[in-house]
Length: 171
Image 1 (cartoon, rainbow, N blue to C red):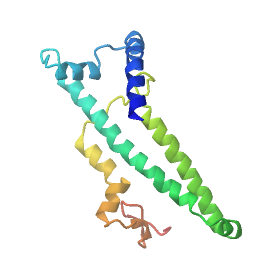
Image 2 (image 1 turned 90 degrees about the vertical axis):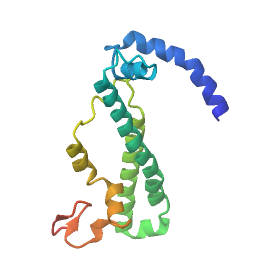
Image 3 (image 1 turned 45 degrees about the vertical axis):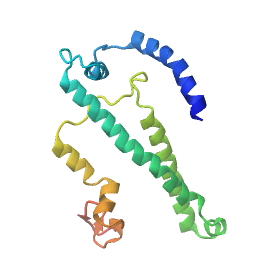
């Protein structure tokens, strides 16, 4: 497969570069400053823009890996149902429909997140610069919640819903 992909990318790269160079609104953006840093032209580098560029790609790499890994899990959940059980038990049929909705959501989210490019004007504009904002967001993020609980879902505990432990009577 790599024997096919690499030549195609090499052929399409000049076309992509020409297209983006003509349509770019701000030519000296984060990527330009990152390129200057790589070329060791430190006089013209804006390190704030380099930091923003690095944070954006860190965010994309972190969450895209999670989304790609969620696809098989969501797919397995809906493709392993017993057909007879689905037809005879309305609760299992409803769970299948919810699983299908979640699978479609993860598929669209993964493809949409993978296509966040400047060319499509769908790139990450600016990552949140404060650590407290990241700690608040990641405190309820599923992989970290599962790590805190030893791999068990915390929604099964009586009196709390979700990974944050909010008290409720509806669980």
